Length: 139
Image (cartoon, rainbow, N blue to C red; front, side, top):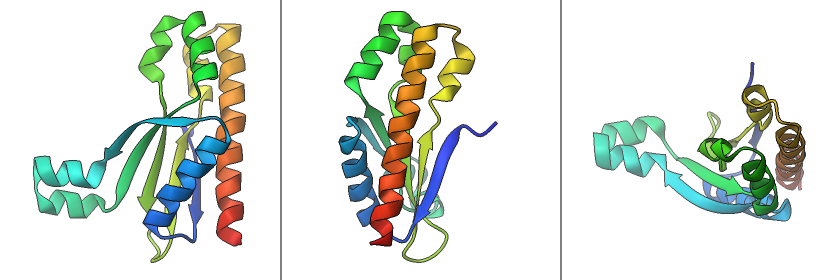
């Protein structure tokens, strides 16, 4: 089973991070957390480890309306929040890859109808953000 939705865009890493933030905001997501994996690996494991991973950021995206519905239905779902979105330097120069969690993974762990509704809404919004990024990259 795939647990992410992934696109590669012809944008520099910095452009992709900025565009991803904007696309998420358009869909009602705020970024609650941000982990610069390269910087963390460099600090904790040394420069070689940081360079090996390259530019790589994890954005913890949250849509408050959807999160509150999910947590009201099942408080334990907080362990699966926020929705992580990764922006990383692509394998081709001048390209970046964006991976967004597939919210349907929550549905596999919960039988609650409300969780299914929230996951479907979140998936539509995350896919719309990725579609917007793909479109922006073409312009």
